[in-house]
Image (cartoon, rainbow, N blue to C red; front, side, top):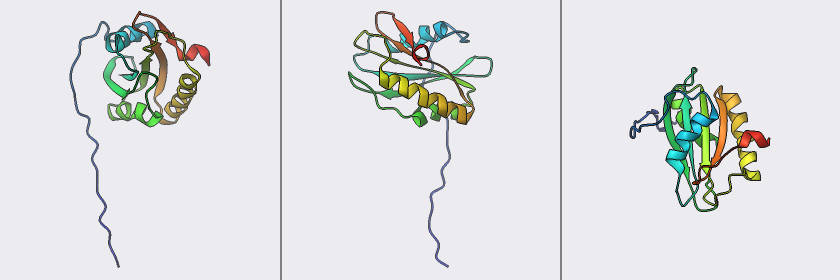
Length: 146
């Protein structure tokens, strides 16, 4: 009988750094926006960030999900949940910036939000909001445009 070598993998959660933020628990999207603005303000390119929370909405981790260009960033739903699954999150807030200064979600933003919500439902991780932020302090939720 012929045998084949197959690689075995181990998934590890690696602490990259520690930051200080104005809230420990996120009870509203406004709380999440405070953190997202701190991380995304004044970037010349689009980036997407995820905040992972426990069942009582305590922040258990933050991850940069994608770094893109001036007009977008490539991200798939699996990219959004990889860190959330690894750290045992119950919920996730996601956000990306619009360097243009216009916080209105694009059609692509809305389509992506729906696909992430659907994936989260399958995984048992609630997508609590998807926010678009700008460097002048504006924030819009993609949930409001469904």
